[in-house]
Image (cartoon, rainbow, N blue to C red; front, side):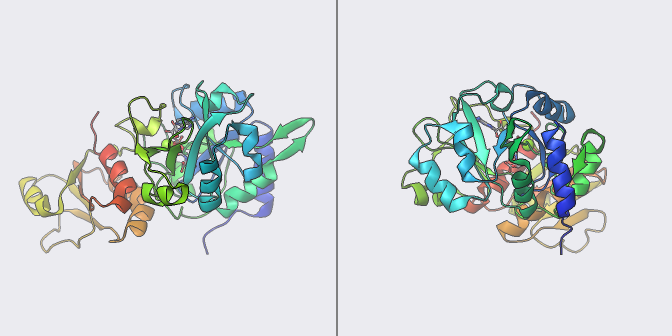
Length: 329
Ligand code: TXA
Ligand code: MG
């Protein structure tokens, strides 16, 4: 059994959120760093804790689709179809923002990102948080991933404590995040369906539900901090290498302190290399990816070599994160 926060801990965390505090909580993708999305002073604490630029929008997490109209307007039918198909789950929808949604969650844009996360602790937290209290209405939790800006997202409560511990009022523990990479982000705010960030839910799955093609991001798309090239990066330089080129690359780098993340087993004679074998299938690979990168990063190697996974559609989310982690920009 994964460690699960108790109902009393979740109630207390909801009270901390209502009072304007910060709560890190598990979702099925990665841990989020949450604050009351209606409270700009509380949301400002998220940016301060993460060291993130103030104009980046944050996703608003909801416990029920009934709360959607508080945050979004002109909601297209495709959004409701996707909500029915994938929520609670790892899909974020970008919609036109409703009147009164604070600029701190939208980054001053005319859109808002929303999702219902598929983790029991997150859902219990959202349900305990939502409601009226002292004349104030609580409905959404603003939460980016609970990492320092530009670093790897946390997939365990221990990752959050190590990186942000002192800056957070409560860290709820929900065990390891099942999915392991951040949600798929789909922009539905401009009459089309545009993929802003690939994730476990693929464009083909989305297209099958909405009966329309999913377009890839263009340069006019809203700002997405995950779209900065140097996002999701370990401190150790990371190089992506095609599987066929790995032996030659290892030979060329002999003498360096190396870590390898590969789906293949370590060949004989790799004693000096810290070799981490990754699951062959994409779900297991994504689930372990960030924890593996953190572990390899902590070894203090000169270089992390990652054997490139297949260029297949279901690997798009993983390949996107690896490409960003390998970018030196
Ligand atoms: O899986 C996830 O999505 C996790 C969990 C905690 O829900 N959250 C997450 O948040 O990855 P964050 O802030 O690390 O990444 C969300 C991305 C950011 O790149 C942000 O710029 C983008 O979503 N985003 C949020 N609202 C947006 C909007 N209105 N328009 C365009 N992009 C938006
Ligand atoms: Mg993030």
